[in-house]
Length: 276
Image (tube, rainbow, N blue to C red):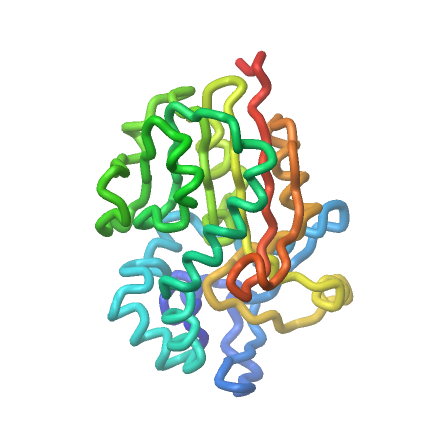
């Protein structure tokens, strides 16, 4: 059973779910055929997602104890390669590389800008906020359901409901939208916290290749889902920002070197000054 179905029992109970018809083991990864893991693609913006839309409460089990000892042990038992991935993503060298890559992207725009309040939505411990960016902020808030200790004493932990509408000057939302059942609605809630004229930074993994898109469009019956139920391209992330009424400043995929060996799509946008 793939980790996704192991952690989301509601998927197995779904009446549209077909019992696994084909199950392979390829380099320690399960490839399955099912209605749950079937994926669809938007022909206009290349956004890829699972066919079934999961409610937030259904997905809560997928991320319970995220990257903690129990989560890592369970996932490694199903996906042996995850053990190395988990260590790599959270290593000081990896975090430093990701900080550097993000600041390289932001610096031409923010080098001489002071930000009163920055909030990292879904930011875990806040370690992915580049130090150079934090230095240009009066306050740095970190919103996350995990409750983990923050990476820096200066940062402040906040609950989502405690962040007032239009109270933030810059919002970060990094590696969150690929995990949620309704990414545009989640992003809309984040944007509602940003003051007119404020900035929004979105970052998602770049996992979709042209070959992958063509496979899905051709009706491929297996697409492997581990924990990302949405997959973005620069085109689809740009389209999401436009749908939210944001003015896109920059949107670009990273190189492998800029993001610790994991390609990402970065987007910086501004909330219109006259936003209601």
